[in-house]
Length: 313
Image 1 (cartoon, rainbow, N blue to C red):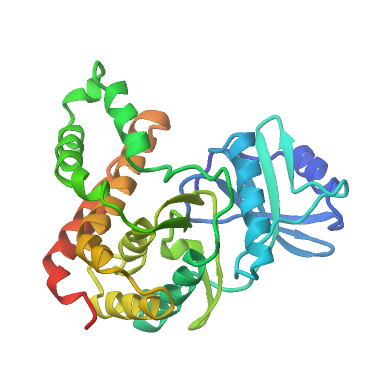
Image 2 (image 1 turned 60 degrees about the horizontal axis):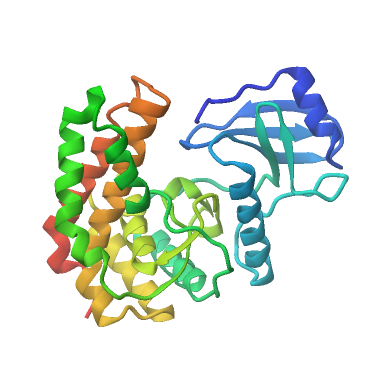
C-alpha cells in the first residue's frame, strides 16, 4: 500500500466517533495502491474501507465526491462514501482528508478473457454516462508532463535517460494526441487493482480519484495497459480481444479511434511511467519503487508488437 499516513489509537477513535458505525475493533493495512493510505476497519457494526487521501486537496476531493454522487444516480457499480453523523462525506484531519466506504467483498482478479469482457462492458457504460461540469483533464497526461519537464531542467534529473525518452516520445505522439476524437467521462486509472470481482463476476469499479473529462480513448488504452498483462508483464492477447469486443458492443469505437488506438495505449503507459518516475524519484523518493516506471515501458513495447492482431473484425 502507499504507506504515507499512520493512525494512532487516539486518531482512529476520533475518526470512528464521527460516523454511525459503532466502535472500533480492528484496523488493518491494505496492500496495493500508490496514491492513498488504505485500511480495513472492523467495528461493532461491520467492516469498512478507511481511506486517507494523501494526494488530493479539498477541491479535488469535493469534485470526486460530486462525481461519485453522479455515478450513484446512474446506478454505476462502484463504492460510495459513507456520510458522517453530520451528513458529510469526508473528514478533514491534520494529516489529510478521510473518506469511509463500505468494505465490499471480493478480490483483485487475474487478467482472464472473461474478466476483461466484463471490464470492457463496464467501461463502455461509464463512457456513455454524461460528464458533470468542472471535471479536470486527465491528471497524468501532457498537462502535467510538460510542466514537469520544465521543473527538472536545472536539476540532477535533467540528464536522466527517462527524461530524454519522455521528451522524444511526446514529440512523436503529439499529433495523434491532438486528433479530433470523442471525449467524455473517464475513470483515468483502470488497473486490475482498481476492480473488485467475486470469483469471475464483477462487483465494482473502484477508486475514481482520477475521474476526469478527456479523450475516451485514454481510458481504453489505460485498461489495456493496466488489465491485459500478467504479473510478469506479458500481454494476454485474448484478454485484449475480449475487452475490445465487449466495449465495442456498448459503445462502438469510431474509425478514427481504431486508427489511433496504438498511440493511446502507448500514451497511457507513458503517463503511468511518468507518474511513477516523478512520485518515487522526486516527490516521495522510494528506493524500492524508483524503477517501477520501467514496467510500463515494457508493457507498451509488447503491445506494439501485437497491435496488428488486436482489432476485432
